[in-house]
Image (cartoon, rainbow, N blue to C red; front, side):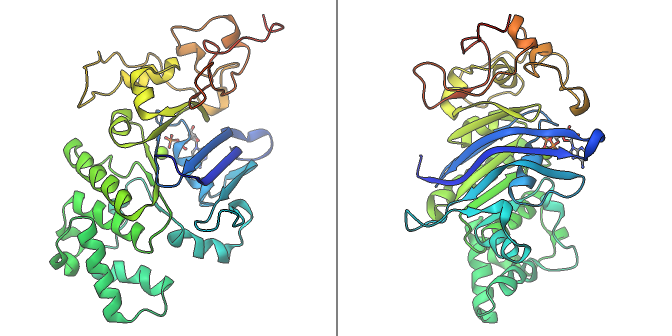
Length: 338
Ligand code: ADP
Ligand code: MG
């Protein structure tokens, strides 16, 4: 499923700190989310996934600073409607933009419901804030509709968060994220605290809703097996860069970056042929001690001379325009390098 672009990220670079103490958390990120697509973002802890979600939504707080690049939102409708420069939005426009056009469900979001308010009051608060013309009865009707959308019985509207299971609280968060029918929903590891069965159930529901409502999803997780099942495309991050991007089925069938291959051998797949779980040796680099060349080379079983010296730039391997990989195994090494 690939519609027109709804979100384009170009050259996005983020530092934590400034001056000599600064460390670079995101380097030159290029990524496009298409309308109606589920884009999975995978990578070990510390690879920069959350930083990317925060930067794109302008929720990055100090010491995080966006030091380069562009993020554009392409509104639906007229093909030539002007793209919105998200990095230039005023705080006021940004507030309107969030929830209405783009909503985000954070890591551990199920614990961010207010414990002293009912589900009804939390759902209707979003509507109250952004739909001032809505009457109380309309808000309640919409809250009921949202709960049904995520598969929760409407009699739970009067419940307090502690009266709901973890899975239900997570679904309430998803219902809130969908309340204003945004074009884009970003989910940053929204299901990690839940058991695997529950995670899959929620994701299946999300994908079905996407088909019904037509929004696009960026789904972030360290567990690539979930993405293989539920996303259209997958982007894999390592050390603040995107090292491979391709259709989910292609990444599964034939991962090109040795890091993608390692990730696929780190999580059990529920379907398809079994892979041996070999994991990835070593651990991810610290931002303050990023290896030269390809950041993955010290852990890579296939590294050769140029990998320690030159940073591989993401590009399509020969004959595969829909895939992008940043690895010297798949691109000609410039003659002057070794
Ligand atoms: P992920 O979500 O993939 O686990 P993060 O985006 O949270 O990764 O972190 C990326 C890198 O940025 C990590 O090395 C992390 O230590 C660093 N980082 C995150 N937040 C901060 C912060 N507030 N100050 C300094 N470094 C940070
Ligand atoms: Mg994270």
